[in-house]
Length: 506
Image 1 (cartoon, rainbow, N blue to C red):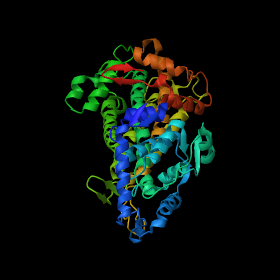
Image 2: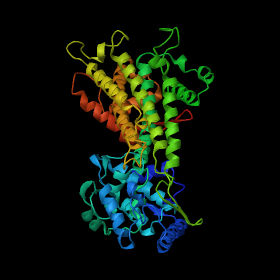
Image 3: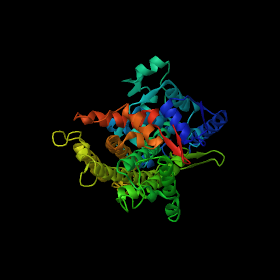
């Protein structure tokens, strides 16, 4: 059970709730803060204080005062009018993460919502009801307005949800789960949709998958190093110590540990003096990729416990402040930076694929073909990898440098953070396919060299992967192999290799 306080949610807890469907509950100490915040809103309404989005219109309509009789209708109209998302829906995991993160933000007691609204979020999570939320339509400032409006629709019993792995109407899902829709009161509609939870949810999922894939890419690269009789001296501890980047030193240490008993690696001068950069510079390149991951993690860990709606209620000071905590620039920058790391993992992996299949660059069978000429082997797998790498380069363009004014220029600078996060996740999926292709080629090279000479760590990884994709003995539809292996890398606990402190963890 994950207990939500609004301030202490961790990445590991997010992973458990999103991926393992661990139950969630509201910390008892938080309920009083939530109720106090709500009482402050209601008292200010009695006192006829003018508060943005509570008794005024929204955006450019902020100067329009709304009468008492229309305050609830104002919030419902907001959700209906702002539910303008388009495109394919986010995955259930992302929808689930959005529910969790939005609830956690409201729990801190600065949003002026009733406890029963937050309980609705928790009921959705615990019952596995996940709103259908279109991916496109957010500018990433004023909050993720369109995506969060679609999330809010489900709480009201409207729209569609995923329930028991099927897409259905929210009404049917609520009836099946024994839940009732909620009715919005003053401030609550705005509190639901002013926030960065769409971009942050996508960012968290991307980070969690990227961390796993980056460890796996190291394992695959180690196997490639063996298949090409790579020079282990390039991973020497002293060499990396004098550069000084911790992530680079960590990658080199993991390679030394992984390949310590390999009979396939060589020493400098034994076959050649130096390897190509895609082999020799693995710690430098992947170490830098780890730096982007660590930066993204830092910003995401802050944001999952952040209050990002507007206006905010400070009950002790008896004040309501309109500000811009909904602006997604910190996450936009983090996701754009992470995209560089994702792109480079694919870039360098594709170059190693080329070295594995190009007969001018190695002494392996051309294109790793079992019958060169009659059968093409891995020739077109390298084409696919090159295509994915090129696509990543177009997606790596920073979304955060773009801005388009909205709401009659009232909202004149936006982050495009949700686009940055979505592109990062798409690039990650592309890169996982490239790593899967490298793994297919590396296994074929290792089989040619002699599996019995592999390091114990890479051999174990090889044997597990061979259960998914068999050795290439003749040409076949390799698209199926790539898909199976990519799915295995993503989902299988057997492939979930975490190497920390020079030790393999599965």
